[in-house]
Image (cartoon, rainbow, N blue to C red; front, side):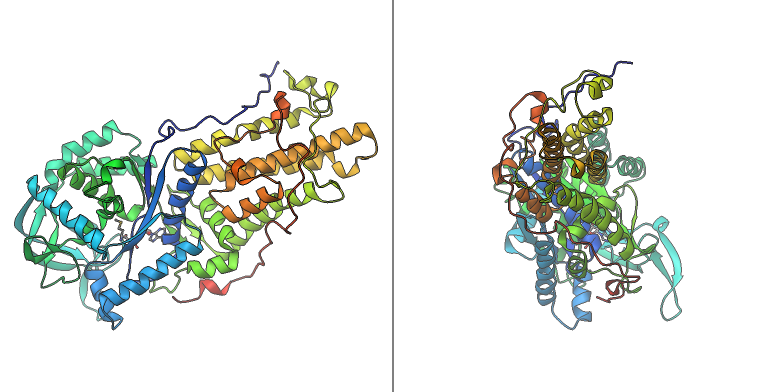
Length: 572
Ligand code: MSP
């Protein structure tokens, strides 16, 4: 059987249909409640958005922004401040600074960090409210129902279960979060959500990629197939003082979720400059806040005369040794401690490699150590170490590729008769050549873990290639052997250059170290212009003959294993 000709794509095409050059995009994380310190679930939301933002930037897909911040109003924060014996502004300033520090430390490349207590945001919310009112989307009515402060939302009976409270009295709790609900009856402003059932369905049917992964899209379609009652969008000021007053009615405070969702517009300068960006927005959110983003937010936007966001990218939750992460269980994992124990890149790699948006994922120390050691320290670091070792590459250069040793062939079976490369070498080189496009398409589909899986597989194949040909056995003094030895190293360094370039959005520090060692200049690190093994296609390779960068030591130090590391027991 004749195999297809072995062809390597010379330059990565701009991959995504939605990512033409010059196209603007706002990527956002949720804004985080300022009632407690960050944990790894929060970090995961931010990391997903960061990796997408960085990948897009390296693909030259157009101007991008990445927003994050803290959600500071509402009953939850008001009560947390009382419990902490402080005032809401003081609590928010302290917790917000913690999130800012955690994200800065984790190399989240945010371009805007918004706090909902900032005047620019309050002005945007008031303007948004006025737009809702102008369009006749609000009315005043009496609302009664079960309110869950932890979730900051009213819940229907179907989402409640009976429990007993700490004093042994019967109570009702949210089936999803386990938090107690309280019967609330108030005069509130109501939003005509029910009027948006059909427009929402149409929006989703017309935009099957609006919510990813698909099970979450289906879940939202299901919700929209059921009754969609109007939504209470204010609280009596006497009960909730910590929030933005309803313009022209100081007896009411704007519902914290309406307040919070508008952050995506405030960061774009709403109501003045948002039009330059909106609706080119992709919101990364956890599954617990899907309804707010996929039902309430698009409906509110439509009611205010704006379009829904382009995409909502949903992820599931991290559990810890199979258990839900919670303060009461004392198993909340602190990102600062994780960055220290596993390094920033090590932990970023773990969360993005093991986090599967469609389903909950489990965190435990041994797993992080195993993944990071085997894939970053051993496979990737080992490959760099072996291929740049002075014994193998004494001149410390990017050696030449020999077309005689690795000739271009049409049929793999001819390979060995013509040169030194074997059929499996051609197969492996083809998989590395297709990697940039594959990775771009997985990023586009919000499957970063799959992109990392493919890269990891290629790293393993490259180690196999290197091992198979035992370059350390080749005699550099023999001209024919030297050609082949140099070719093996050239191919390996080319692979490493591709991996380093593609890994920049995930492990920026390690990728920088790797690319610097390979003497890849800052202007040569764009994914959009990434070529692989141009010499195989008879094109010049700008790296050939170049002096390698300085050896700054081991690429990634192995992590020490420990049976039960103390960070899992550390109470926050
Ligand atoms: N303030 C709201 C969001 C408003 S956005 C307009 C909120 N804040 S939160 O702090 O509770 O959660 C923020 C994000 O963290 C959500 O995407 C949520 O899904 C995520 N996570 C919280 N716990 C999580 C895990 N255990 N695992 C992964 N992510 C989780 O909701």
